[in-house]
Length: 290
Image 1 (tube, rainbow, N blue to C red):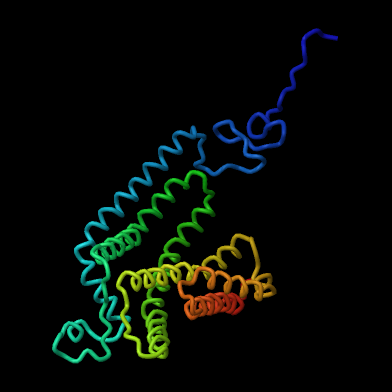
Image 2 (cartoon, rainbow, N blue to C red):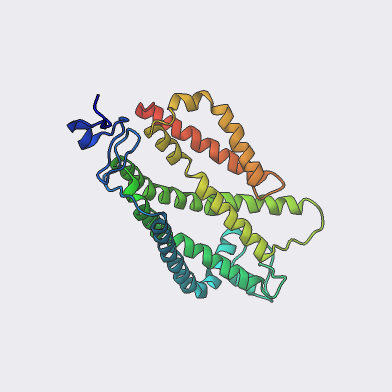
């Protein structure tokens, strides 16, 4: 027996593409646990990943800040327009001190910084929304090397659709939900007796922003369902068979996060989620998608 230790050798096929344990070998020499790595995947030190992520976050933050500062001077008119789109009256009628103020619901301010804070908050949210496409692009550039071609297609197809659904949700909140909600609030308050109704600007705008944001998220339900089915995570039949569980989940989320203790806003949110859920399943059934 030879004193030299025997060294196991890989055959030509293994040496080119497969390690001894059966894992695939990436072009850089690493293995991927039996799954081929994305075509642009490269090994990088963790510090480089963190640095790249930080720089991309800086780009998003700077973009949002610039947009916010540019919008601040316009927030006066935006706040007034939003107020009277939802409340009764017009700017001209409510500013006419000597006129008839019946049916007019002007905003009330109870602090020296309330109006300024409201303006800055509205400008910051608008800046984030407008900078959203930049953020999505930076996220994609950061994730792209680790994505497979099919995953890239899903991402590039879902992002514009997600943005459109979010805009539809905001418009639905602004033109449908909020007017109904404030009509309910006024009717509810008037029914309590001889009480003068005075809506505070900051609290009212906070409620408007919260409802618009929640409905922008809620309107992502159709996209989430379609993506889950396309990626093989679930099926239409599975969702249909468990719809009651989803109804209870929607109601729980709505009443847990809904900004209205009377229950009207959570009810409207829950009904909207159920309609979107059932509408998506109906569309999938109509197209023959399981």
